[in-house]
Each structure stands twice: as structure tokens, then as C-alpha cells.
Image 1: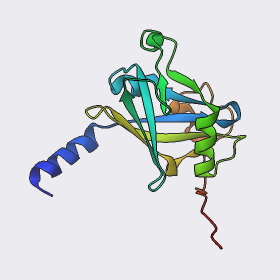
Image 2: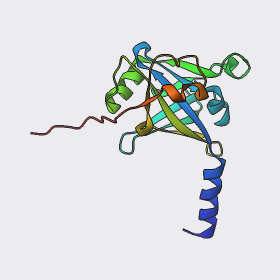
Image 3: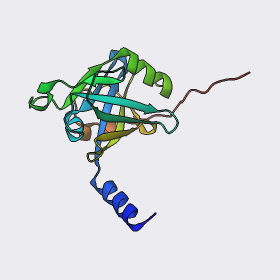
Length: 160
């Protein structure tokens, strides 16, 4: 790695911001913090891309409707009450629960890092924690003591 690449990598590591998203599988919804969406450029849509090989998910700024994109309400950034965008998608929640082996009657919080310059947020699905039900309206700092780490149960194919 050259000096410029090392410097860029260290700068990006320092400059990235932490965030998280929460999945409420029993309600087929998930929440993304407004600040994370704002930091990727306040786009009209956000798109989610799942990499099952390294158990991560990217949320990126997107400009059109598609099968893996969701519309960002224009009032999201002006509403002082809203700290997160609520997305309801049974298909997306079921897909993720199936890939990760999550219980569809439970809720999970997934940590992530915001990379503003690249207009992307990377969520580490392997670090998901199960929520105990009291966190739906709590802030990120309020839930630390009530989280329980979960074991990753990525389904494997049984070949005979």
C-alpha cells in the first residue's frame, strides 16, 4: 500500500460516523436514522445491497425506483420529530431474516458506518443484536444494556 493509499484509508477510518438500523421483523418494518440518509446526500431514494459472502449490507444514495430501492419522504429532513425513516417491506425483511437465520418474531439492531464522501453506509450484519422489545422508541444510547448478541445462523445448502 502506498503512502497516499494508507493516508486515505486512515482518514476514512477516522472520518466515518457510526450509525445503526433496526429491524422489527414481526411488523415487517425497519428503521434507518435520518442522519445516515442525510449524510449520503439526502437522496430521493436509498438502495440496499446485501453481500451474503461477508455478511454486510450497503445503503447507497439512489435516484430512481427499483426492486431494492425505497423512496425517501421529502419531509423527512424538515420534520424535527422524525429521527428515523420507517420502511415497511415484508419481502425485504423476510429475505434478510432468511439469509441471516433470524427469528421473524423478533427485532434486531445492526451497526453501521457512514462514508459520506462515497455516499454509502455499510452495515455489518454479523454484528446484529437481538432487541428485547423496549427499544422501539429509544435512542441508540438507551438500548446498549438491553441488547443481547445473537449467533449468526447463515443457512447452508445440504447437498446429497
